[in-house]
Image (cartoon, rainbow, N blue to C red):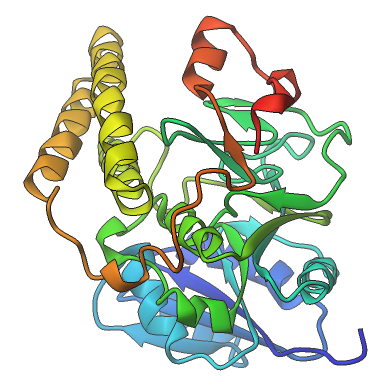
Length: 346
């Protein structure tokens, strides 16, 4: 690569002091000739900002006046960062010094590549893929996201089975590389999502616009996970179910969305009943609240209506699985991405 585009690693923080202490040193070891490191802070009260100022004075801090969530926080922070590439990086991620170059090299190879992500593995079990992104994200016909290396809650051991870089449907917000010009064209994240699945929405809109989302196998990071919202959190359950409905409504045409959402009411009812049988009443109530929200707001176009479809909806985007991942997992007992019928992928 003859020229080195300007890259900004941007970490959004909210009361993540313990993660900053643990993981910032590895981020600072990142090697790239034209690199800025920025921490955006969502009005933390745990001393995060004071810690960074004292221990890492070279890091730029951008402070928001409130907790705007993942979506609003990043929208406000990135509006103040000048770079050719943004790397959105969670505060609970460990990287190695050379992790940036392979991804930028891949993205520079094709002007249509808007977004890319490295291989994401589990910090606490480093031979395994991590739930948030694994080896690239996909989506099924009913709007359920899954990953190469992770289906539902089952993650695979990395045995070198996904060493081929290629196009996927979505890239994890835990470590997302995005060209600034495409971030601007898409108008950033939809702030209605607050947190969870906002990156899938962004990738879907960009793919509808004719751009590509890539997985880079030559770069890997280690993600702790649950840094802000733990896995067993009813609010996280609410956001996941609510945002998934928003995702479908925004990115599918009315007729297709109506069919999928009708099916989702049945599937989500099954999930609600499962939570009840497991004694997780708060999670069951969270599913109910998600659907109540969706019904109340179903006719709203939202603040990103202008960029919902950068171009006409495309029903055969790379990374779509023509089938039900829930059926494959719970009924057919398929646990690995390679077990799925590859002919069902576009």
